[in-house]
Amino acid sequence: MISLNQVTKSFAGTNAVHDVSFSVSQGAFLVLLGPSGCGKSTMLRMLAGLEQPTGGQIRFGDTLVADGGSGFTIPPAKRDTGLVFQSYALWPHMTVAGNIEWPLKVAKLSNDERRARIKEAMEMLGIAQLANRYPGEVSGGQQQRVALARMIAPRPNVMLFDEPLSNLDATLRVEMRVELLRVHAATGATSVYVTHDQVEAMTMATHVAVMNRGRIEQFDAPERLLAEPASAFVAGFVGTPPANLIPIADGKWFGAIADPSLPGLRGYAMVRAEEIAVTDEPGPRTLQVRLAEIVPMAGRRLVTGIVNDIRITAIADGAARLPLGLRFRLPDAPAAFFDTEGNRIS
Image (cartoon, rainbow, N blue to C red; front, side, top):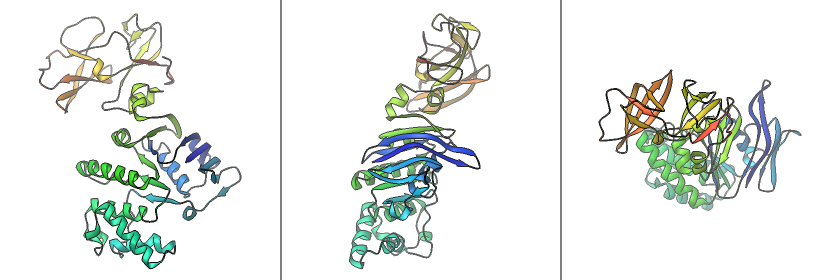
């Protein structure tokens, strides 16, 4: 349904998005995941038609919607897309029903059709009782539902979300994730969702594009990102907790602990937190660590220590007593190796 071919976007000669290509089918839920400044919001704005690509092509199905080379672009209003902003962008002087009706008026739907669409959207989002209230009279979570209802009322074929849950508290974010997935499934639209929160990506997406410095580091299903990260960046960014990246030089952990499992390699070894044992006994592949923090999580504890100014996280049983002389014992072999540039080599 959505395909990008070598899409680039430059600002003052600097690439915010560089040579991006991917495609997803109708009904997919694509998450653009990455840290602030990685280019994900710029990518979304190009899909919406709010930015024109500098190079490459964007297609919705068989329709070319933007071509950076020729400057061709289809205006946002004619792309059959809906967009929910981080700030919701509701009209404060319009009622909830009025906000939902506005894009239907712009589309010149009849009065009867507008009333039917408004009713359908409000019922789907559970906000029918708020129809005559103004945005300032409802909660943040309810405002989010109004913004969603306004987007789905025109029945777009592509739904775009720009970090829509970042202004909500943690409990409400979980509830709204479920709501968004329900709306996505009910509409059958193709969704593109921007976030820096990898938990949102892992729980909602059918496809994830992990972005870094304007490029896609990996485009994959969520479970593949965890099982087979394509780069050191993905390994260190995705997961709760993310994998540990330990520097190796000439076959030695931290450049000091010789290990035959590291055959003369130089770069980074990926070790998952669950592969590290917490102990107080010295031995091969065992590191003395300085305790940084302990985070309880689902009956277990994430224990983070510091070695040579590098943070390493292990998982300990929630009931186990931590030893006074804290040590981490590394596994017999890392889960993966990355070269000094962060590219996966095994």
